[in-house]
Length: 196
Image 1 (cartoon, one colour):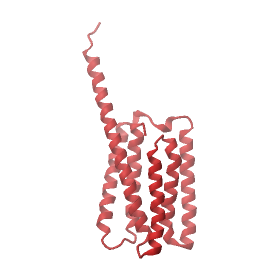
Image 2 (cartoon, rainbow, N blue to C red):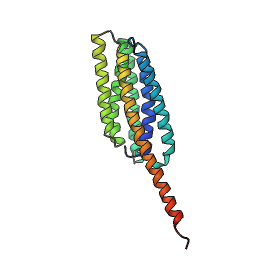
Image 3 (cartoon, rainbow, N blue to C red):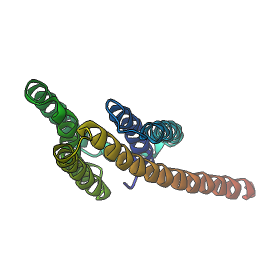
Image 4 (cartoon, rainbow, N blue to C red):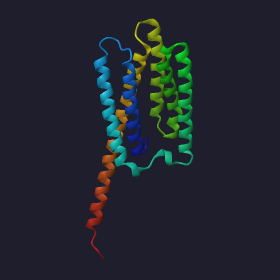
């Protein structure tokens, strides 16, 4: 993402949802997973808060959503995501509740693909691929073992979202620092000019 604010908002949103996925994994976690899931959830929230602070600091930086039609495309993509996830979750709940978490993860992953073009962020396609792989792996593991699909999905999605959120927060912090340094340099140069 080329805008500091977009990176900061990504850190906020993905960190928040990373924490939610770690929490979902705690519905039926294998023995010994609980401490790691708790730590992942807490770190995700810390990254989300950092993202919020960076977004507030860089709100005037602009956003890819300011481009003509971008906000409309974003709304359509997210709206379709919520609708498909909700409909699939209802069907899964009535037929095989164990598939709810993998289904939601799959839909979230797929919706990242068109969002990559909206935000001009190819890295979102990598995240999309990882989330889709997590969803598929969770189903396979659940079928072949006693580990709940929600545990595998929650842990896998949580880690993926946390890593990407942390990376986004790092980019936002670095760019925010450069912008602040640049503004200070401009102010110093302006102040040093003699009055005419």
